[in-house]
Length: 111
Length: 275
Image 1: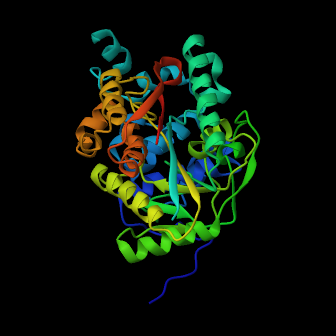
Image 2: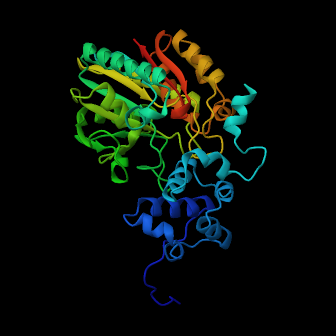
Image 3: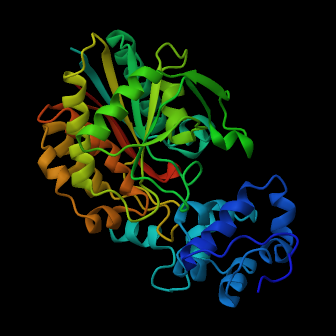
């Protein structure tokens, strides 16, 4: 039996977790209203058939989690900049692993 | 027969236009001089068409339909895409392309083992427009953009990219045309964008890569593993464009025009000329 028509039409269910997460970032960062949407992402993200942990990671944003969920680095970067965060703090902000924090500086120090 | 008359390789880091203050002034000046050299080489070569192989940064191509290789088969194309969200520091341009030449490459490929994806509409990003603006600022030559997936795994193998380069050379040589063709590879070298390693430049990797590239040791480049490339940076996969160029000029030596690990640019920036 076909269910009732829903409006607005949700983003179609997609095949992979990686696709869902990246699709949301891709669409949001390309939206003409992206800066406003970034300030309150919940209504935008509700159109995407995201698992709870995916939605939470996108809303926070939880950068290490997004990387774990398969967000592409180029999209992570755009999402990061959209949130007005400083480029210099990227490495520090995007990893939860104390060993990997500031890995750029660590590798340089190690020579 | 057509002739592959010139090969140029360059990083496509956009800070060379809109972030000059971020880099060491001496390194930046040398990078700029390198671009002037590449521009002079292209001007003197006077190609009838320029092919530019670069990466797209998940702007045009997304996971819903991600090709390994794509040719722009079009009369013209525009960019950079980034102009929609920020001032790229140079004009948004529409450049003329060469539909017939692109179609020739596509048709030969479909017949001969390179199943090119094709697009007849393309707003290219900085990966294409920055090098084109620096190397051909007056848009003298028609350009065919060629995409290699370097951003969304699974990527075409390094070996495959090298062999596609070899295929380009063979196909151009067999072309019943008097066209002079230049090939630009844009991307790399080691860098990481959007990953926790951002800022790390693997100078050892870059130097070894450039040594092999300039010595014409293409087999060495084609044998690089994904692990080696990924360890040098999450965006270092872009060296695939250079490896394709190396395949197109198989065995030929190249001149290193410039290399420096420009920390403020987050990238090991290099430029070479090959014939």
